[in-house]
Image (cartoon, rainbow, N blue to C red; front, top):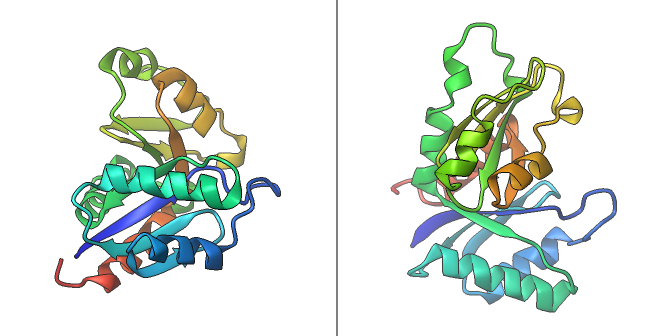
Length: 185
């Protein structure tokens, strides 16, 4: 069994695309996922599975959400090893005076085309900073994420991929949850 994280984009935000976590858990179980656990209401699901292809599994989850709830929701997946690497490689943790409660990870559906990545690499947004690394963007917002221009929509428009962001505390909690599902993995 493999341990995975599914990150849903844009559910239960401002009363839009309401998905009860208990129903989401059942949906995953109906797709032969096991040890399914959700974390907070924003669409974070850790689980184990035996699917050969996690991208195909993500498409199946998207399809089932559309059938069950009547709206489309992008689903991004990461394996336990991928999430562990993401946490370990945060470049902002190497800097002095980094406020960890101002750190975020923007997860991308795909590695952006290099030409799109080049378009944003030198962009500045006040004191806010970011580092693009593969299918993730490390975001540091000293003034708070709610005040930054470095939003999911910004990155989606510039990079032409789907994006969804989680704060550093949530990312670390999800990693702990994944590790507890399969400590030997």
